[in-house]
Amino acid sequence: MTTPVTAGVSLAGCSTPAEQLAVLFEAGRKYRSFKYWDKVRVGSSESRITGQGFNAVKFDPGKPARTIRRNDGNLGMHGAMFWSERRRFSLPEFKRFGSFPDEFSFAGEFEEGIRQIGNSVPPLFMRAVAGHIRRRILDAVAQACMPAAQGHCI
Image (tube, rainbow, N blue to C red; front, side, top):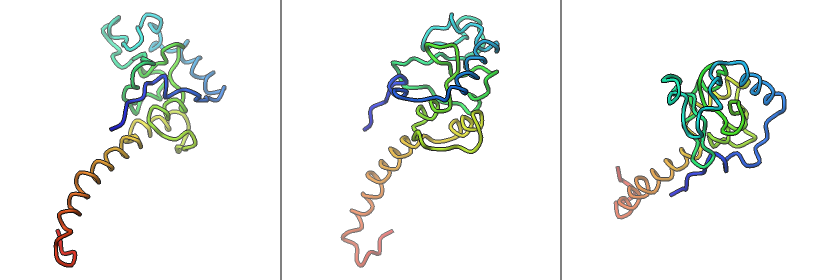
């Protein structure tokens, strides 16, 4: 069994290119989705204030990251917001939340990379599923087949 990692811990040592941060900070000043950023509580969404924007969520660094949606890369829309800075998360930060290695490359730029993360099954989650299948199903089948004659099992 694995222990969930908090959003804050998962971003420890994460590096974002300065030009990407500049774009994210500009979007934080420009788009309506950030209008209520300072009023949204950490771990909460804009819907508590306006009745809309339930996807404009300010992540809580003390809890596991929420699901990354395929359209979180669209800076003009509501989506995952950084807890201490008026901005969205960067591609390297989204990669960390999705359990992709830092050196992993996606096809395309920022929005396309986040779309791919949002459409994916996180690698560490898939590893846990595969390990469970192996331990609970495949190993059990192999054990049941051992006494069978000459490997004629299932």
